[in-house]
Image (cartoon, rainbow, N blue to C red; front, side, top):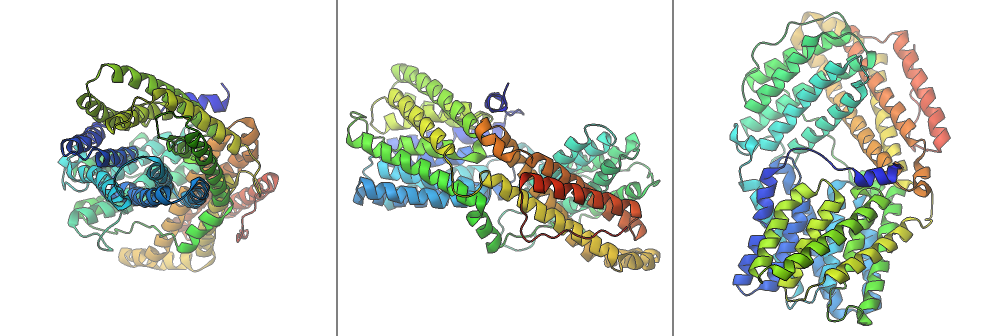
Length: 637
């Protein structure tokens, strides 16, 4: 199958998240029931929509990380609902369309910052369209407060309800514990794959596990530092995994022989994290090579951190500055993203307004469905454009037909409220495929509209979705100012800068007095650790940034490659650049491990780095990639 069709048929796999299913069942349905019983059905519909959108963002992770993942988009949605309501009440069709187009430009640019910002941009636009077009008797501030309350209800369920991981140790740290344990399992998997074809894929999986654990542990907090012994212990266990990951990466890059028992230590550490227990005996060391010696040293330090319950708790993260965020918003990727979102959202709002005033809807007044649908279709982080269009169309048709059948037999409103609760429970499972998610959300929204007093609207929902698909397909293929593939190029440039910053730091260690300090400190373990701790902290931070940036770039390239050929050709060759950058970062990691062991780099290491840098320069020139502010680091033999 061609990539654009294969992606549309691909679905994620994994166990059913039963805890998220329970939260979904207790979110929108009960909120709507309470509102109906209190004779405030319109506000109940708003609260249920907020809970539904929060449920889409309710992904696996820690409780602390969920505060940001659910809370920030909810705040943006409430602001959009407030602005849209007052704009819809006081502006005519043309000024309203211009305002919504401007919001699309802003939300699209902000979405380039990251996943949470993208979710916030989505809710901002969807809620502004709903506020402008949904005929409700409540004022804007009432809608905004109820919207926040609906999202806060689901967030409260996420924070309060127990999950399987919370039954071990401290109730608050279930997602964190699983995330840290997954890092040790990923290290063990990489050690098992050393010297095989699976080594690259296992190293990528290790990067993903480290990214997930870092996000789980660095959620919003009231204090700057960990405030409980359990949290400090988890931070120390995560920090102890970093040298293990570094040594395993060096072994995979060199392809050196590793005994089968090498992975036993990390697996026992993973079990100790999950069970909140001590590590027990670890396998005997094998110290025949620098990377193996580094692996055994890291195991010993990890065991000490586990047994004492404390140690280095630095998460080795660097907060993004305002300059970094501005670069993402106003850079090539943010500009292209913002223009396409603005054009799609604005054009769909204009057409919806024209159809609404021409009474194409008949007695239906939900003109907001067309621009709201376009928002989900134009979001690149939901998949390639053609895949989103196919899945959205298929899911809407299926959902509308299912709802038409349910509406014919279910009693009102109690049957529809039960349908809302059932749909909310299915959302966490349906998020594995965009078509399934669309079908479930379509059923839920149509049920909410009917409970709110409007007649059955399945047919018009299908027509508006197909129209939105056509609009987004046209806008997605329009030529834009500047070079196409701006999002991919922005990610590549970021990964290029991060990789070279990491390489430059390691080379500075090699050119400086690092080796002398290591040799002088050999007689004192404490002095040795003190001499290297600062340099290692910076090195691990740069290494984490480099691998995270590479993972983001590879994801963006994979999505771009699954577009139709007219769009996919603009990212051709980018995967070769990322592959070379990954090899460069792996080689830099191996050099860092060797440098710690011997205090110097060999001419062979220098030759490897020089060769990779030359190869990278050729590939960058071939794809026309500029990396502003980056200079090639000299490599001495």
